[in-house]
Image (tube, rainbow, N blue to C red; front, side, top):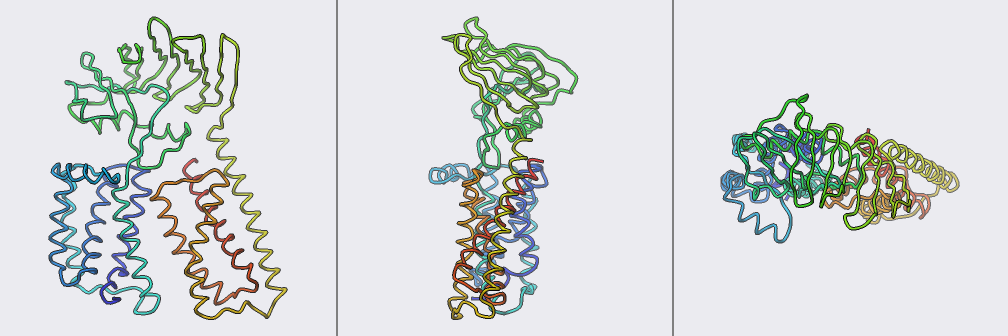
Length: 451
């Protein structure tokens, strides 16, 4: 079995695998450009045939031919029916882009690389044999993650962009947009946006998806449209199914006062600053005197007041990004205190029992090292839930499990065989210690995103 799978731990295969995962989970969501889109195709076309050639070593040529044919089919419009059928059971995404076919020559490179009998790293050993199975699981995960579902970001306030266009696009092809044509302008109402990360219900993350909204919409529509330069002011009104909206654009972004009237009653009044909500927004009920007033600072709600018959009913303050960052630092500080306490506890157990140690036979020691990552992940998930920062996205969860396994297994071998356990409770303490360390790591990643 090892001889068949040893190519999975060759340096170039591992590099492309890690690059594929890093691109799908970080680079695409952060930069979302042509390079990140093509990078997945190049890396995927390299590792996919090598992986399946390891599974079916007698059919390498067939694997490479089928990979090329299926890639061409997958990137064409002919695969739409198959994808729709698959999406009745799950949710995968695919972009029809003929330029992706420039990645096909990578198949020849993968074939030459495989024929060159690449050197596996590490060499034939117990660790190498265990690594091949683990890398195989990570590779399957990477194939699934590449086609992971897109998430829907919706908005509480109306959002529009203005483009220059000669014709009205086909609305049936864009469920996330509504189009309104006025003279040479195309007003695009944003119903929702597709994003690559799970939706976080806060204004800061919503605003991140609005930064280049006009450019993103143009790239999505593309059909005979062009951007309007910043500085050109356009005012117009459009009739929608929810009322008459009065819009003011600076370039292609909403900028200035926005109003919506229905049955001659003002139901929404607010202000935009280059596409981001600003200042005070008032929402009135069409059939009563109830209204809500939202206060925005840099696009983030800081206060919500509800009125009934012009009488204040409730007032709620909302954390801004700065408040959220401060709270994250407090949470990290609390976790560091717990880690310090656990380390002191372990040191106390070590000193009080030295030179005695917990007696375990070799089989139980190995088993403990391999099952520990699961319990470390459970402690990490429990900590995240306790801190109200748990993300239940399946791909992020699988990525975290794989990361914990890769890191925790070697650490547990070091702890069990070199440091050695002193008391039975040490097992639980080490699980909690590593779970807290993982939680600090992921929380710091969130902090970096917020900063």
